[in-house]
Length: 547
Image (tube, rainbow, N blue to C red; front, side, top):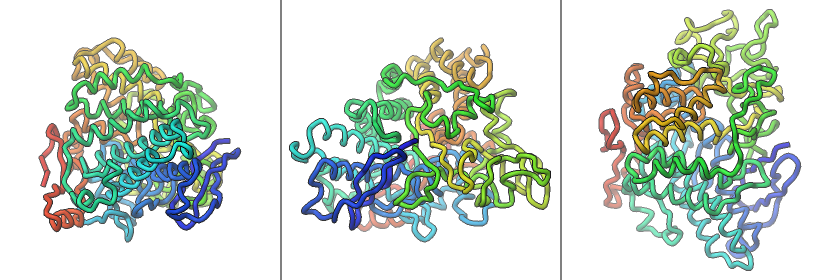
């Protein structure tokens, strides 16, 4: 059975980890105080587990202020980075949460009025800046710990894992808001002047901060972990490879670094090719029985039964958000299987994310990856609905990567992939082309390997004839392969196609990134600082909005 990381919150009781057959179980250890904690290696490990909290799958977490999780509940990465792109049609039929419609229409100015957390219906991730301060404090405690309590090897390991967590938080915040002021020196934690200095760093500065955290982890994180879902050096290599490619246009040598990292993975990964019962290896890849397959570098490890409580393990919340509550979930009136073949006692909440039929049309005929998209369903009281009812009875097609297989309730146990070898192959192909500004055979071969698993022939000659043609083909390939895995907006911006793509759909982005909430701008002004509410990359193909 799989093991999962349980969220550990610093409260009146300290939780420690006990390995067992199924997961990490919380165990009352003692009373938390500044005089007796941390006092042992296990105490320091408990502090490390706090850094994993934003990356578990609960309804929310509260290290510093209440925040959405990045992989569960209402705030996962596909909310920011997939719903805001051509993958998703506007969310019109959701009767709660105006923020969802604003997101899918790229109306980001709506978020000016949100707070730093998501209390009272607010939608914000800015509280992650405070989480980073807490991570920095914990990293400082690891460094300062007496080696009789925390041996040197453990110091490096724990700091490496904490810096993956901190680097990943910085990575997501960068791609939500642009560069933000952060506390990364433990000596500055609690320094009023440093913490009140609300001025955006440069893109180069924040890019380097993220690089440094991931690079440290590459050098010092364990190559393997006994608990599935706990971060490794290979996961750090993936994160660094992706980050270097994102920022290689303005950071010297980073395309080469991204290219070189592919050969440094130690896990022996390869594409998953077992066709299974469905006859489709891409479909099978996301099924519970294939969690942590040969392709998966890192996943959020989930199990059946949890309901999002802090005292329980991770669950996959996908089911809640992919279909309306009038969409039959089991079968049509004649008993024919519908989009979800496993009996479920509760209907979904609403189509918070979907697949735009226009994006469906970009798939080549016979692409096996399109089989995770459901293009017709049975609607109670109406009958079968499909493309012509989109915009009327539903917003778009159903993205069904994680079908129900085990439980009869809405809490799923499918693991959530965070890093796959298919992504590495596509990132490598892009790095190979960008570093030398030429299409190479190894780049073509890497893309064709992914296409072959999808049941497609290799790229045609016209798609490899020039750098521009190859990158256009690669961007579309990434959209199909990485559908709803939190990549699309970041990819479109990296390829210089975000504004162009969304404007062509009639959803012109108001800005490239979310604005910093008004309250932070006012706080900065009160301290004498000019905090730019919006950030726009210099090479953005849309209007510059930096005020």
